[in-house]
Image 1 (tube, rainbow, N blue to C red):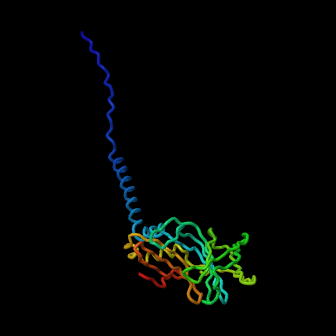
Image 2 (spheres, rainbow, N blue to C red; image 1 turned 60 degrees about the vertical axis):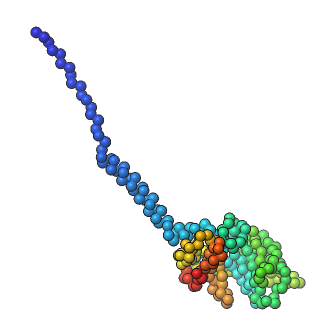
Image 3 (cartoon, one colour; image 1 turned 90 degrees about the vertical axis):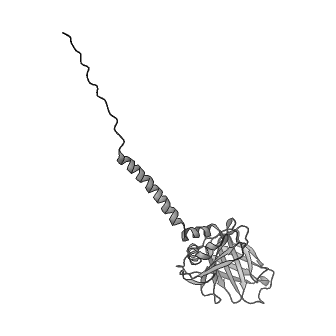
Length: 247
């Protein structure tokens, strides 16, 4: 009688196919990432990106202006950023911090000197002896302080005239405390002149502060200068309202 030996059946492990669910989740994650990227790119086009272009092409921005008046002159002090090689040619260059002291005679026959002397006191710093040179294209006198100054700094200027006669000016902010800042003024100007700016192939941006003739109110003056000589500007009130423009 033959004996038969039976082999034990070996268990064969079958490879399970990858879950379709996992594939779908992974694909959904990729699509979501692409969607977010497209959304960001879409949001960056339009006014926001145009504002960034205007900011990148900044030639001058005056962060604040302080001033004081006498019967004969107006003293102004402003600080911010401006081109190292300052030229209104529509091509923005590297900007550096600056501060400028400016004196404007109110009478054409007053202060016919070539230059003026005085002492500038910035906060608790040591007083600075300054010489203001006459602008060859105008009647004002100015000098660059060579550094930036914080808007909260107290500023006093002493004008030294003939026979050592001295006139002291305590400068105050030209804008009210709740006024919008220069960056908000630039955003408003970009929105207002969007089509004009988009049509310019190359331009530079200027944000300044001006006052009315009576020196009662101050305004933001935002100007765009193209490399072809075109000029666009917006005058904006301290509250953000558009006062006027040139297109």
